[in-house]
Image (cartoon, rainbow, N blue to C red; front, side):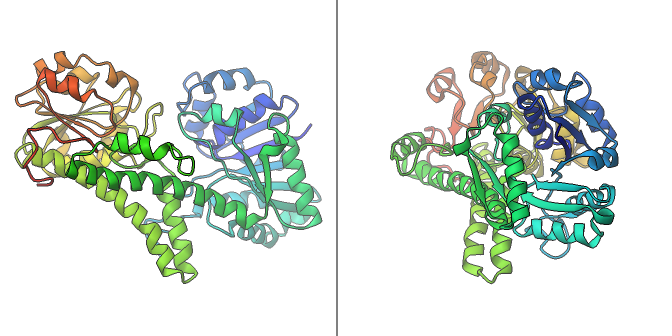
Length: 470
């Protein structure tokens, strides 16, 4: 029996290993983490990751060939294949701050693998985290510098994950491709074949792509950078659509119908969020910068700059529409997760919008069906003086009661079917709706009496002639 261990029980490690255990019943899979509360959550009835279908997968495999443990050293020592799936956030300080990846957790995991491995036993170590180019080579150096755990032999591979939060289980069960990068040596090719054999239990052979290490590492960053580029592109067009009276949805549909372009990631909004897109774009820009490619680095930085512009533009539109100030006014915020179907608010545009409104002294009432109050308060970072400015509501109606304006910031399905007449009756006049995700029926809400702003749509007559920003 092959034994697999994954270091890191987060958004990538947990779901990917659960599906691997489901599809490979003859393989023993252990997910380990130094965080005991996180491991306890994976062993409970309330998983730490909200993903459709994940509960059923974990319940079927846990206790059979899937385990979650805080005993990191034991499971690493026993494993034939070790996946490293730890957080690689953007550095907050030091060289490359704001651009480069912080590899502290990754390096710690590499040292754990080296120290826990038994003498004379070979082991395949697989990068699962999104990492800068040549990180696999650095990991190999760490393993060798530790003497290979007293004689253990290691082969390092890159196997980046491409699933999207909210559809992780579906994406993992039926992936577009599985990418395996390895060294061009006999031992490296043998290790890649061993990992390929694991995936071959459920992934068609033509979807398992083999590359060299560097190509695999940069492919993950490039994929996310290109997706982010598309979002920033359509958001830049949304600003022009508003200025000239065009509808960005019509533009996206017309452009997306071109087979050379395609329609994915062409929905205008308040900006992209989540833990990966911005981080990976900045890493790609930093890699260009480190290799003296200043123009290429600036190009990718502008993808992020346009994203920041779109979030700021939305806040300015809210403030300008409400007579140039939201000070003392209640603004309801529907949606705080960075996308529908997840409880993840990392890098959520909603948090930036809330902070912008709070900075103009608004009173913000937030409702999200998945993100908890503790996380909302942490992400809005309201100091003691602003604590009373942030309220977390139990539902959309409570959030909107007595509000001057309502912002829709996540495209949860329940926001499409709300009783907006009831909401209108409970709001102050004039009642404003600011739709950042194309969720509401603009025509119906205007018939009810709302002043409606929807990103990239022709402006409400009320707003024509008003400045686009305060």
